[in-house]
Amino acid sequence: MRLAAPGSARMGQPLMNIEQIDLYAISQRLVTPFKTSFGTQQERSCLIVALHSEGLTGWGECVATNDPGYSYETAVTAWHILSDFLIPAMMGKDLQEPTQLRDWLRHVRGHPLAKAALDQAAWDITAQRDGLSLAHKLAAPYPEGPKARVEVGVSIGIQPTIQETMTVITQHLEEGYGRIKLKIKPGHDLALARLARQTFPDARIMLDANSAYTLNDTPLFQAMDDLQLLMIEQPLAYEDIYQHSKLRPHIHTPLCLDESIHSAADTQLAIDIRACDIINIKPSRVGGWTEAREIHDLCQAAGIRTWVGGMLETGIGRAAQLALAALPGITLPGDISATARYYAQDIATHFFLNPADSTIDVPTGPGLGIVVDKKRLTAVSQQKATFTP
Ligand code: OSB
Ligand code: MG
Image (cartoon, rainbow, N blue to C red; front, side, top):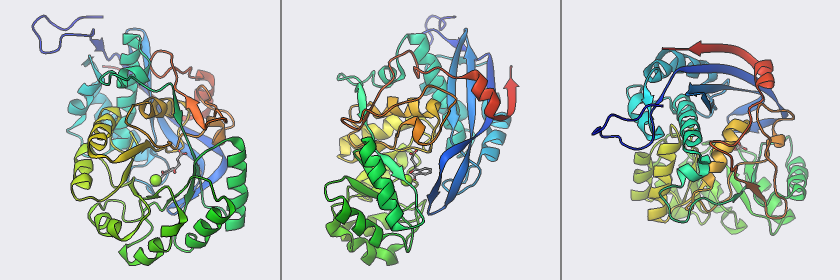
């Protein structure tokens, strides 16, 4: 490994020349279909990147999937943006710290899910170089350091009937999950929330609308005021911040933003116009872990509570979610269910729930602290490309 030139702006850790990047398009079948207000997933596609330097490999997961339902990005657009623009912009560069990536990739507008895969791999490989877990590297600026285990909950897709949803909730409560998130959509909302509250009076229950409503539905949300919900996530349009600020003073349930927040700048806007009480920080949605940590800092300073959201990640993405959720300012349970909830087999180390306190242990090994099962990765790959300078 070479050192930065003496007198250069970047003294510190050794430079890592980016020698090779592999890109995989994979697809794995979910244990059960996952239905939201924007669609149903049974086969979950995503992209995996492997960043090679100095004998180390950093791993990243791009959570763009088959349909542009959650975000405009799909696995196909992400493959194009990564292989034609983002990877060429990285290739042969000297990586010192992962915080450099935002500048390297800024000329590509948007496409945060594609960028986040490379950002995650850069955090992983530099943490390995530093002999640190990703959680410790991310938490380096905070004196209290990372948490050893993080509180998690489970996200329950839309079931055929609300009675069936009660059965699924019971199963997950019995497994030890201490926070239940229910997906809602118009016509599958108030009666569901009421029955869930009635059936499970003490459970921590929240709802996620995935942008299925408008301000005209304010009375519907007011009707939920007395249900003691932990929060309602993203009720209004997927890119809106302003209308959420109009809804918020009229409801008692804490309002959480997911889809609308793409950056630290969006976060500052949401804080300034009081659009939300809570932010779901999804590192992929905001282009990576550097931006996610900035959002954490802004929210902590402003008294906005935060948690780490999920996108049905494999063990690779789950490990990186856990490392972020270990930051000291993240106080609400994350959507980081055990790997087996979605995948019977997986491409990396499985994570297990500690049922006594609804937590998952944060990996302690260098970088992501996982082992990638290369055989399984190859078996589920539909396409692979290798890039060199
Ligand atoms: O809105 O949080 C969401 C999954 C895919 C797309 C969007 C969302 C979700 C989830 C699942 O809620 C979270 C998870 O368990 O990974
Ligand atoms: Mg959401």
